[in-house]
Length: 250
Image 1: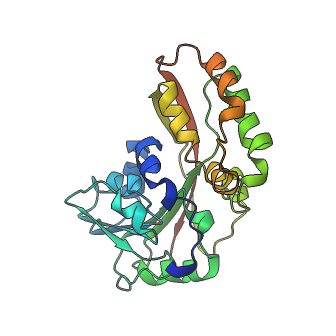
Image 2: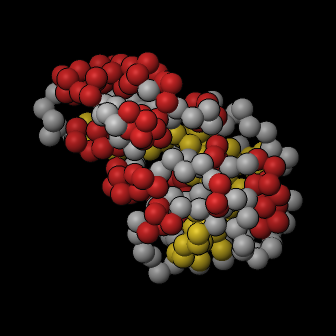
């Protein structure tokens, strides 16, 4: 429930809005193609609304649901999107009202059984649900090696256990519904070093490190990252492969 949810991101809500990558338009076009109707889509665990905004191009109305008021306060306003403070397991939305439900980089935080009951209640019979996530990005071997050290060696003890589901592309999670084949999809961005460092600082393990130690989790790799990147103002192409699982519910 909202009062007991595992809150890893309210404290970095501004950074999450500023530094998280944007999902590709092709993802939302594909999700919309799964829906027989396009009246209402629901983004569960919507955070600051990155995916909700993508859905708004295809659905008459989008509702973004998240238990963190701090995250929703940072969400970008859109005439086709409204935001609601609630957990994904108990949205408070009408039964059989949604034509699509998604969870973008959020499914691993949900309580599986009540969440699946809520999705089944919320969606119209036969409507789709999709969960997608991204793990480590790819830039080049030199930068990737530094990021991998940060991720596994330096921040390894600080990752919450749910992160293992992201690393496994959600294949460690089971669902009671028929699965749909998803196309290969990826996030692609061009960022300078400052933007990339900002993104690394939004990791849940980085937040846990700061809360527990008061230190900078990126300090041990700062010099190596600068050396691997090259000129800090140089835009580098960054790719996050998407793991997508989609289902026909009901």
